[in-house]
View 1: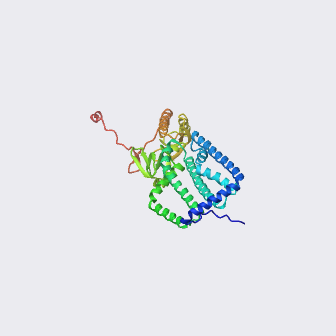
View 2 (view 1 turned 135 degrees about the vertical axis):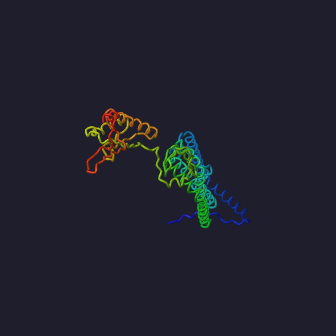
View 3 (view 1 turned 90 degrees about the vertical axis):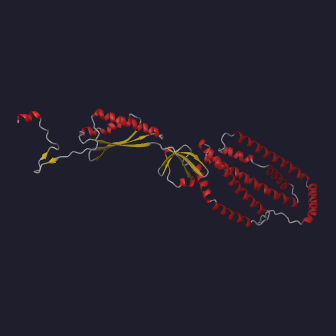
Length: 390
């Protein structure tokens, strides 16, 4: 079993550079003279490969330009291929010549080193385009998310580029025989230090990215948290600005906002309304039995969803009935209007049926010392004519 050794740069003393260059030239001349047939075939194949890669890049660039949606997979793949560098295409062609034409060891070693650098850098460029494209695809390109996404993408692009090209640099140095252990340790310590120093900033930043990706709410949504009901106006990199229903602007950091239990009122499928109706105790039983049907008719006549209605409680001065219905709309104004219409319809129906609403009342009965019930009010005063007769 053979092991592959990564190509390394030979160590050459400064005074021996001229001698080595001359030896390279001599080896190259001998190689061309003895392998001109293989070299010609390899050059032809290399030119065809270079032309094919260049053609593929142009086609991908055209597809990327003509694409209407950057977040589509087709557009992401096209943009990725369009980022194929000329250095990579040239080195792929040269490596093909190197493999076919049996190049001398010195030239082979140099080509392998350059090819390694080219492929590592090119893979980093491709990965960068793919990652950024998938981020845009996951976040979406809606009207409300676009501004926030563009603000976030500046920093996301910087972080992704730094990480990928730092890894690419370490891979290249490692393949060149450089000891990268200290470099990796230094980058790790530096990253930890920066993370601790900017912990609050990164916390809000990642919270903003979480809002963009997870979409618990969007710009224009009405949300509730704690005792606040407000409309989302701006989702920034560090904080979110909301406009309360009472008019004032509220600003809260993204990390603190996501720690709260948020109710997104805009995503409401329906709004449930409950009425408590109190009727007088003098309501006839036959009429009380008809109350649920009367309430159902009032609800359905106003295009609401009837849920339930019926007797609920013997209160101190009333017979309590509960009505539950749904307004199939996420608009608060629609709910208010429907609730108003149904309430007026109930009042009108009860008036036609002779059903009276109860209100808190109290009747006092007075008893004589012997226990005989007496009227709770005084006897009417005698008139003047009655006094004259007496």
